[in-house]
Image (spheres, rainbow, N blue to C red):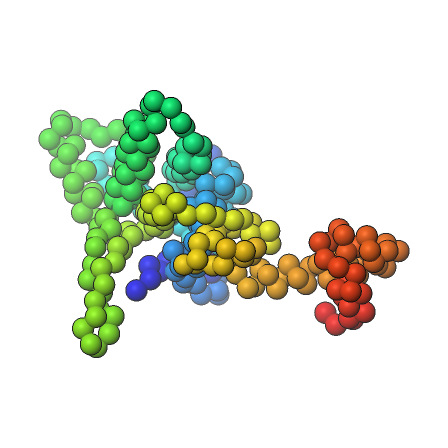
Length: 275
């Protein structure tokens, strides 16, 4: 059973003062959209790590993939479900740094120690994102016992961390064991960890810019686009470019070279007047 996540159909906006901006859904007639992040976007953690740490960049990510599902501690131990800009930027930075370490080979005597340290960092993010409210701790009053009690009370209001669950596959009694992420952030860290274990290779879609896995289990090794919609969109765009260049007097041979195809294909594109 896939892990599903909900996206506000109206999009999102930033609310609050400049030093405490908070992500908020936009209200409207559009209904929410639901998708399966781990199945529909096999390289979502890479797309997240490449997100610009600006209000516009984060809004663009949230509009496509939804909120992270995290919160922050308020005074007196309450958990605020709203997602602050500083938390988003911090998580993007953390993911980006881990991805860079993963991609950079570090041969030499200290390789084993560095690898274990890297695993420890990823494990901490897996655990932290599961509890979803441990980021951005604000100062709490009272003694240590009271502070601990308040934080435990706050944790009780949060979604549980990912659990291994038995899932019934059929009436014949077939069953499987699945991991259930607590939120989108947790799902992306889980996706990253699985990529490390599987030594998965990824490619960036030239149409939408999203990253996707090219392992035999997900897509063909020679796939250039993350989904058929992007492939069709890119094909239509190449036809438009060919027609525009042809109308400007560019020879078919040069158009074919620029678009990475042959003259016969370009001739068919410019002759086809259908949109």
